[in-house]
Structures are given as structure tokens and as C-alpha cells.
Amino acid sequence: MFIDYARIRVKAGNGGDGAVSFRREKFVPKGGPDGGDGGRGGNIVVKGDSNVNTLLDYRFNKRFVAAAGVSGAGARKTGHSGADLILRMPLGTEIYQILEDGRKIKLADVTEHDEQIILAKGGRGGRGNSNFATPTNQAPRHATPGKHTEEMELELVLKLMADVGLVGFPNAGKSTLLSVLSAARPKIADYEFTTLEPMLGVVWVSDYQHFVMADIPGIIEGAHIGKGLGIQFLRHIQRTSTLLYLIDINSPDPLEAYRTLKAELYLYDNFMEKKPFTIVLSKIDTIPEDEREERIAEVSKIFADTTHHKILAISSVGNFGLEALKFALYKQIKESM
Ligand SMILES: Nc1nc2c(ncn2[C@@H]2O[C@H](COP(=O)(O)OP(=O)(O)OP(=O)(O)O)[C@@H](O)[C@H]2O)c(=O)[nH]1
Ligand SMILES: [Mg+2]
Image 1 (cartoon, helix red, strand yellow):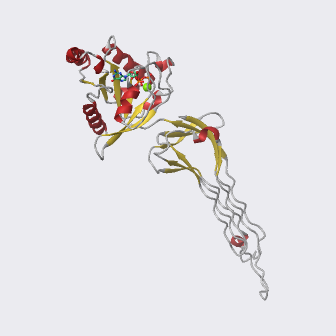
Image 2 (cartoon, rainbow, N blue to C red):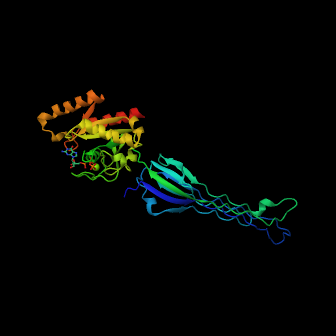
């Protein structure tokens, strides 16, 4: 299940208490104070993991508490530190702390594999009485307690990280395209809103060059105000470096289709306007072969005249134009870096 939002509570480990202890040994008449310090409490640490694509782990498991530090002991023994609690999260997770008054503070943005960020620091261990001996007080009977930590409420928001975001009306063939370019197996069907949740696929351009493509549910006019499947998934293409507008060549007006899609994205987030994009006509196998070239040329001209953009034409089913598309996308991603 794909989960892209969760609320959790975390608490770093309390510090262990300092010990009060006196050395007692046979034949040693006056043993001094020898209570050791408490150990540090475990931190709450978030770690980026490219193998995780969802916040599912945080959906049902809501409270995470790191181990407390162990108390100090006699013979100046310092208690063990509590182990850090490591929370693995998908790349693209934004972490906010929710304050009591409801305000949110961004704590972290997990973007790299294996990157670690401490969200909450474990409490310091208390000091044992061996630390408090002075010339005038050689037998201190006090130690300090370990520091107790506060529980924090966090909000996790996943915005998938991909290089290319697929944008198109329902049924345009987005999932089919992802399925032929990558090993991803999204659901494909001949009805609208087949795709209900985003999916990523890795597209290999050569043995060692690849990029990541994100398939999201179809967009319709009014998506930015919640029409269709609404906007919640649009945030998954907020972070992609490029966009791919996929338009069915059989659309009554491909240019209008493109403009509607573009408008929806910009109404959602006007930063999208800055992203490089590619316009691609899909399903060209559905046009009879003897009319195909003419039809593609006609639509290309309309786009060239009005948007000054070149467009590509493909068929996922007929395996047409896919290699050229892969290279064009790869080039665009590299240029956008
Ligand atoms: N003839 C032909 N049919 C295609 C092609 N690509 C996709 N289709 C068909 O178009 C229909 C919709 O394909 P999907 O890939 O599910 O479309 P989508 O854009 O992901 O749709 P949503 O998830 O609903 O937004 C399916 O019946 C596909 O088999 C193509 O290149 N040629
Ligand atoms: Mg789909």
C-alpha cells in the first residue's frame, strides 16, 4: 500500500541517572565516593532509504521511543548509552514538528540514500557522586539524575523523488508507457482513473545510465481544486526535475489538452512553470498507417506555431518512438541539473 502521509510521536531516550556509591574494601579504611555517570539516552534518527517507497511503516505504528541510558554504578562505572532508534524513510520525505499551538516547523528533508539526520537528541546522563568530591566535601552524597526528554509530535509528508513526472488526462497511456520503459508493473485498463496511487519505475538508457519516472493518476480540469482524484498526488511531481505531458493523438484538440494540463499544474504550484518538459503524443498506432505521418505533422505544426515546442510521437503498444523518447528525456534531465 502506498502511504504518503503519517503522523507519529517520537521520544528520544532519557539519560541514565548518576550513581551515589562509596568504595568499600577490606583493609581500605576510608573509601571515597565512586558513583559513576549515567549513560546518554538514544537519539531518534531518520535514515534515507531508496528501497523504501512508502510511509506505510508509520501508518499503524505511531509511537517510537529510543532506549534510555543505563544508570551509573559503583567503581566509577558509567552506564551504557541507550541505542539510537533509526527510522528508515523513503527519499523525498519531509518531516515537520507539530507544536502545541499547531504551528509546524520543518525539521528535515530526507533526500539521500543512507543520509542520517538526528530528529531528537537523547538526554544526557546524570553525574555520579564521584564527580562532586571537593577538598571540603570528600564524601558527597548526591548525584544528578539523567535528563528526561520530551515527546514530540511529527508529521511526515512524502513527495516522491523522480526525474520525470508523467502528466496526462486519464487513459492517455501513462501507466502503459511506464510499463514498457521500466520494470514497473502498474495497473493498466481501458477506463479512467485506473491509477490511484503514484508509482516509480527505473528507465535504463544504457547499461549504466538510468533515470526514474513517476506515474501518477490522471489529471482533469479542476484537479487543483479537487476534481477527479484531486491534488493530493500532484505533490509527487513537485520534486521531479522534468515533466512529460502525454497526450492521446486521438484527443479532439491536443493543444487544448496540453494547455489544460499545464494550467492545472500551475494553479496547483506555480513553481511547476520553471520545469523543463517534453510533449509526447501517445497511441499513434491507432492512426491508420497511411494517415499517420500526416496526422503527426499536422499536430506538430500546431504546437510549433503556438508553443514553439517540438513534440515527440510514440506508441507503447506498437513499440514506436520509445528509444528516441528515452534519450530525449535523459538528455533533458542532464541539462536540467
Ligand atoms: N492502441 C494503444 N493503446 C494504448 C497505448 N497506450 C495505452 N493504451 C491503452 O489505453 C488505455 C489506458 O492506458 P493506461 O496506461 O491505463 O492509461 P493512464 O494514462 O495510465 O490512465 P489513468 O491511470 O486512468 O490516468 C489502456 O486500455 C491501454 O491499453 C498505445 O500506445 N496504443
Ligand atoms: Mg494509469
